[in-house]
Length: 384
Length: 129
Image (cartoon, rainbow over all chains, first blue to last red; front, top):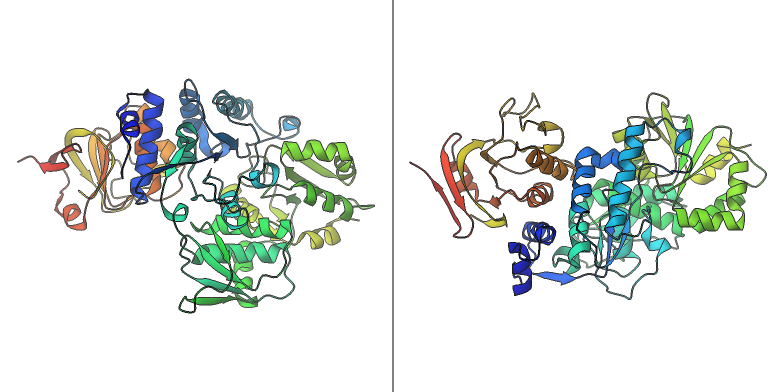
């Protein structure tokens, strides 16, 4: 990897220990991915926020790094473990809460925007076409590359943080070129968001860094997000390219049979004890739509709704939150289904959700069974 | 030597595994002892060794574990892999543990327990007789 004189000096430690560590991370990442150089980025989105995933080691590292590290580009943040406004309603111990708040504090000290959201593409302005960014949240990286005309690799928590501190990323892989290794032809009729989530999950298993995808038709935001979330869960692939691709590229159909295979892999229960909506978190459009669907109806069991705080605040002003709470929803800002500490297998056997990403982590991390249903079906079956 | 991911200069005794290592859950971060019964290095301490293994596997959270092992003074002097995976790469970068990759032939030639020295500035990796 070619470094400029200034970059070499930082790597040697001549610009302080924090810069040295950040450059060490970028060089190690760059060498591992065959980058030729570092290039400027304009926006970093960080993962490694939830104490449930990064643990004491992460908390300690951030606490130490934040003593002198400062981000120099716009930097946003993934969800954490809970919503401070209602954390007392859940069985989280004091240690979890204080460690999580320490993590929050470390990021804020570094100058990170405390967005606690996995849908930065929906709540922040999108820079101009072709802008290089560094997104560590997988669904956000895929969305940025596929729908927002931005360029990012699927960054790790560390490479994204180092990029935020240095303002650069290794120039490799999707930042440079996209050469899809396969084309997936969507063959399932009348798809809903669950179908698109399963399609994404399927594509993620087959794609290296990018995949062509054809036969999609018009999709709404919920469906696009579901597809990005699904793909981010199952592999390393970080971009959809819409179309058939070259004639010589391998092509494979996503049909009813393939869909059933994904369904069988992730759906392990016939019904859930509670419902979760969000992973990715819901945006304002989805909250508006959910409010309309629940008009005059109420959930017959617990339903957790995850959204960014800015969306919650907007939804409060419009009156959606009051309406959702009336229908029995638990509204949770700053956190998400994915790797949530708020659902424990001690209390819950199975969860109903329309999220493939949520399903994967509920099953593999929380250790609970999952019942997959589209939102339409959830409203039909679980409300009166 | 194929790639230098994290540079440095060390001398030490090789601890070699032909199996990959998942730092999250396989290594005790306080002692640096391999705690996974199924791993060939079970009960061996990685502390102050030159750890030679094919590659890292598992969650990227393993990078924090490498950092913790180093903070607890239980880390290897250096790591040598066949393949550079991002978890070990970022973990070693965080913890400032020298990391290089080597060819399959070089990997085969390194025996457990031998004394080696590594200097990335001069790109040398040599066995002490």
